[in-house]
Image 1 (cartoon, rainbow, N blue to C red):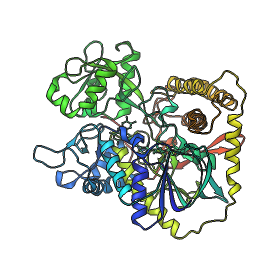
Image 2: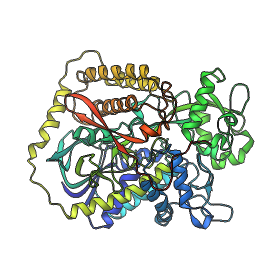
Image 3: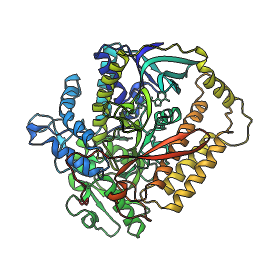
Image 4: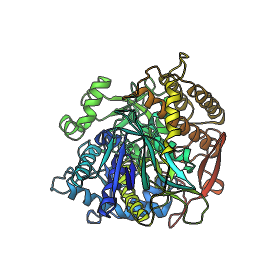
Length: 567
Ligand SMILES: Cc1cc2nc3c(=O)[nH]c(=O)nc-3n(C[C@H](O)[C@H](O)[C@H](O)COP(=O)(O)OP(=O)(O)OC[C@H]3O[C@@H](n4cnc5c(N)ncnc54)[C@H](O)[C@@H]3O)c2cc1C
């Protein structure tokens, strides 16, 4: 079990990185806790952005709208790379076999997404993520890249500030193994389930961020948590932005199209933070409908809805008993995406070669939702995340294979696994105290949703921090009643919960630290954006046995000066 490049996660970011590292001649492997095509990337519906010049679009416009969407917190050189590489990346995916939906004239079709003036979102009906994920998986199979399927990574192996592989548990047997690598890429996805409810799959538990944080790498801008404007009340399921992109409207209980008031130009297609805040304001001020507002697309017609939004129609019908061709759908803002993550540079490196002084771990890389490059800053534009996974997945695959070429494997004793082995044994040997992993997880999720949602304030966040810290104490004693080692899902859930509590704490610590409102982070006690003092990233470091420490890092600006953000 020795590789040049080992990639944790086989979603879009991980597979794109693997494909690239393999093309560079590296011996690469993927390790994933679920079968690759079950990764959350599979759930992406709406699409992937790119400004193609032959459509009269320009990367500068895409970049500017991303910068503005980020509320000027995104690093502008990174955003430039994202928007410049987008076109070639879409064409590369098309050439691999992604059957993008077409226009009437037979060319690749686009739809309009929030925060953007042009229709530059490429899509495959409303299952874009699934289509791309399956095509990339075909490439992985075709090139014989080995995958450790249903293996759970429990820790990174770090010696003298450098990462040399991972310790992981094979779920089928419960055996703990050391897998050695010269470069390790964290592509382990988001942390959605730190909140309850969330649009994210149950497996989105922030393991990658937790692994890096535990090993000593900084997490950046963790307070920036995106609430998506359209989720189902009953279970938090996502209703894609594609519905508004294709022309859906939002109404309050008085039948007013309330976005006219908040974003007179872009209306429902203002950026997500703006729309979510507007909806929540309507609900809080008594113009909601049972804690929701209405999403109406009846005027688009049955044929159009069933053709372009078939999955959405089915979701609304199955889970809300609403036929979107005949009735408006009640929706509300819900937790969707983490803009922050493991701090990286533009090549996915999690260590500082620039001299800016943020530290990090050599040989460690990150990409996709687990990483913070940062291209999304305070608020991500719809359809920029799939783009981020492939553009920065590819770059990290390149850089990781180059790093591996200059690195030799270290002599690491196999006893390195004993810490994780002991941890698992101690988890399994705890006395029953009537508590459960599920109970702690639910309390954590509702606490975060109560106090770190669309609107925040000091008191609420302090309450949440105290609660999360008390939940951590309970987690240290939580019993696992099923004692077997073979596919013990409660055991896995308990380890995931440890990562989630780390993520929750860093979100709150970052949010308490940032004393302004920017992007998705809106504090009722600091209503305004404060560029003078807060046009900077937050970095959070773990301190063994003590509270985490927070530092800041300048935002890299190129050509776009901060302006008031109006839509
Ligand atoms: C419902 C939904 C719809 C979305 N729609 C869009 C959209 O239309 N457009 C857009 O741009 N973005 C969209 N997003 C966001 C986007 O899909 C995600 O941000 C992106 O797909 C994340 O990809 P990833 O490769 O980083 O991670 P994922 O696809 O989540 O993959 C994570 C991988 O890490 C592995 N892993 C995690 N922890 C461990 C561990 N401890 N050990 C081993 N393996 C581990 C998992 O097994 C998995 O393979 C959507 C998100 C959701 C939830």
